[in-house]
Structure formats: structure tokens, C-alpha cells
Image 1 (tube, rainbow, N blue to C red):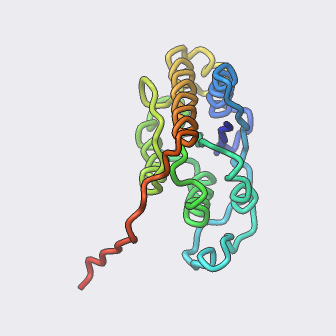
Image 2: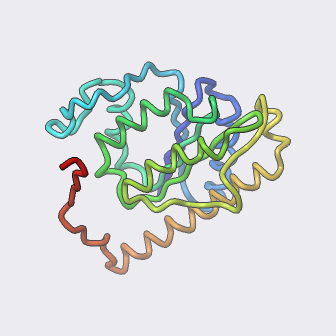
Image 3: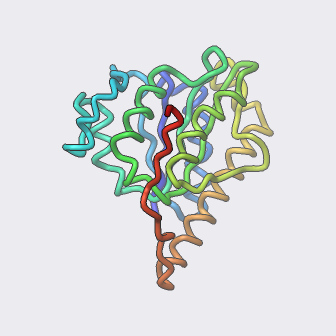
Length: 206
């Protein structure tokens, strides 16, 4: 079992990374492998809705989205982390997730996921919701913690003083490991994914 921890902050070893690192340590204690991937400094093009990915299985912009998209099958769970900018997620992460989920949705379905946000002071809940909406439209079980998954601080040293925030990260890691192990048990006992109905698309413009 392996979890992707994706860092959407422009600061590779900043506050968001500090939260993800706490999760990584706890996952290891739970017997789950993980890898932190940093996309916050990449030049990531926004989605232009060309739908070429539906024909080719790859995004027309050949950047980090395709590089990580090609690796999705290596991972059993996902945690996306971001700093809070104007009460929302980083622009880099938004462009990345728009294109990753649009192009590679079938490689993400039925895999547990969670959001992690980092702020100096406010805006955490709206940023947390920004990320979580990607999961709930993609048939991904959402992993929770004992509180919304957030840490506070203007610099990594501050985050390390956020005792409750760090405990939330550890609880999240424990819950992710627990869910992954439950899914693994289900697979071993022949429990398949739910059978999907043919997709129905309702157009409200008549």
C-alpha cells in the first residue's frame, strides 16, 4: 500500500510540507508507504476544455500533470496539500487538479483521498472544500480526521508548535491507513467495486 502526498505550495519545504511530513511519519508507523511529490513550483497550464484527453488518454499540455498521471496506478490513496491564498487553494494546485482529474479520473476512482491546508490565520475551511469537491465528484472515499485537516503558522517552525494541527495530521494518517487496509481486505475476499449505471447527463437548458 502506498499513498501519494502532493505538495501544491510554491515553497517546497514550507508549512504545507511540514504537515505532509507529519502524515508521512505516521503512515510509516502504520505500515503504509508514501511519497511526497512537489508541484508548487511547476509551470502548470490551466485546462482549456479541448477534450483531446478523451481521445488520447493524455493531456494536450505535456507537463507535470502527465508525468504524475502516468504514475497514479502506483498509489492506493492520495492526500493533496495546499497553502491558503485569498481563502482558496494555490493557483498551481488548482490548475494541476483541474487537468489531472479531467484526464485521469478513471485512475483515481474508488481510491481514498484527503485534503490538507495550511494558513497563517484564516481561510482554511474554504480551501479545504475547494480540494474535497474534486474527490466527491470522482467516486473517491474521503478520509476524515478529528477536525478539518488544517495547520497554522507563518513558517514551518510555527507549524511545529501547532500541537492540535499536528495531531490532526497523525489522526488523518491513521484513518487513511485503516481505510486502505479495509479496502485490501475487501479485495482479498472478492468484494468488487460498485457496479456503475450508464452515465446520465441532464441538460437544464431546453
